Amino acid sequence: MDYQKAAVGGTFDQFHLGHQALLTTAFATAKQVVIGITESQLLAQKQLVDQIQSFEARQQAVMSWLNQQQLTSRATTVALLDPYGPTLTDKDIDILVVSTRTQEGAETLNQQRQSSKLPSLPIRVTNMVQDETGSYLSSTRIRQGYVSKSGKLFDNLFKTDIVFNPSVLEQLKQPQGTLVTLDEIKTAVATNVPSIILVGDTITQTFKDHNLSFNSAIIDQKTRRNPALTQIEPSEVIKGTNPPGQINAKVANQLIHRLRQPNQQTIYQINGEEDLLAFVPSLIQPLGTLVFYGQPGGGIVMMSVSQAEKIRLSHFIDPSFE
Image 1: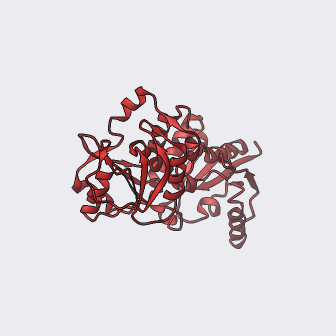
Image 2 (image 1 turned 120 degrees about the vertical axis):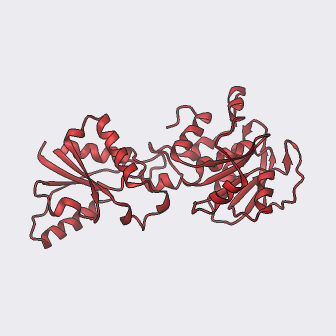
Image 3 (image 1 turned 180 degrees about the vertical axis):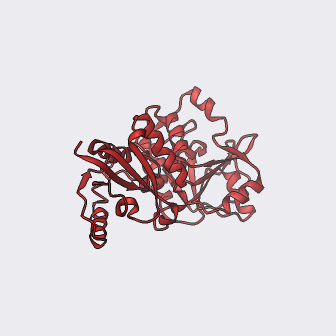
């Protein structure tokens, strides 16, 4: 190793393969590494800022990885209250390690060091990790719901028709979220969430009856395969048919395209059966999205979209997805 102490910094939200690559480079560069983790008050300009994990959760994710890699004794984590952190005060830091995307920030930091009568530090740059689309893997794209922490694209789960086997269908009869009361729904939808998606005629009618806001609803004009006794006017009929026990790829991809468009109270009518189409918003919408559907004989289920929930649901479709 050529250096004694490297400095590396970042938000480290949704700790992913790109973060691992950056830290691996830092530990291959220097004997000791100081890892700056951005404090929450500096993140106001980030996309989906309300979905960024707490400082404590992000720090714990970094520490867990360090422990797994047996690097804890060589690392120090610090809170970044400004863009420079200890690089203007710790005289033992003798190199900066950055990604290609943050190289400009390291050069700005060196300018600040020069203004403070400190020598510039050498900069070691590591390439960004790419996701399946060829875009760089980032916490923002994870929060937006496009990719997993390993760079897998959730859209790819719907490339072909999905036919669930009987054992999976039996598991899916259980609530895939939390059973909630009307009062709990009112509280949940009043919070600042990226999107609210409804699946089913009855739940959509309930939201309309109580003047509850939502972004999109998926209905089939049926309740338990009988004509629904509701008064819901669809905004658009989705082309194709979604058979029972399946997710039709053509229908799913039309929904993916439309659900990603900004809209208010757009209702999509499906030909066939809409129940299993709850997988679509749950897997492709931003983190923090709320998905509501009706549980036969059990009430209303609320699914809060998180990265862990996305992976859990993905495994019903592709057990190897990560």
